[in-house]
Image 1 (cartoon, rainbow, N blue to C red):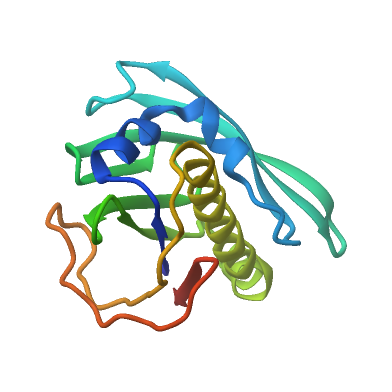
Image 2: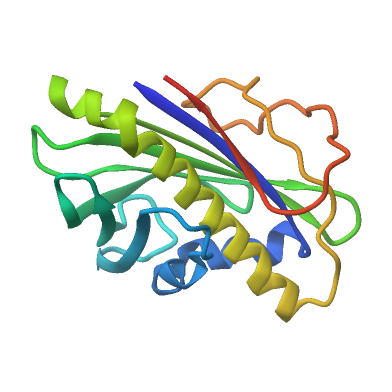
Length: 201
């Protein structure tokens, strides 16, 4: 199973960031231009209140300019499986058997005055051996870039809505997946700017 961790500091309190996680129609707009091949193209609610366990969403991602494959549009479906407002939410694949399996956990952590650390962990597994090869060669790098782009777009949208500077950046993989608890605090990084993603196979 592939695991990707990413995070960014945004200029807003967790209580202000939390409602945005349910506004699925805004997710594609957060795709920052990072020069990658993968882009979240659409997201829409199919069932349930968007901020409740059991909500189902579907959408598409576009994988562009892939050698030998060209541009592909891939559908996805996800169900909200856990919520602890306003600190964490988890989405899991809700597609058919034989499709890619994935789980996305998001934590919101207070960070100084009126700032929030948004931490994401995405885990996924390809359904076939040849797709695992494609994942190792292309997909995981592009997924990490796409996740970075979405976090950068989220931070940018809040920077416009709430005048404040984005603070330092840090990333780490020292917390366990599949838990509703906030991850342990991590050492601060002196770098400032865009989010980074770490990838583990």
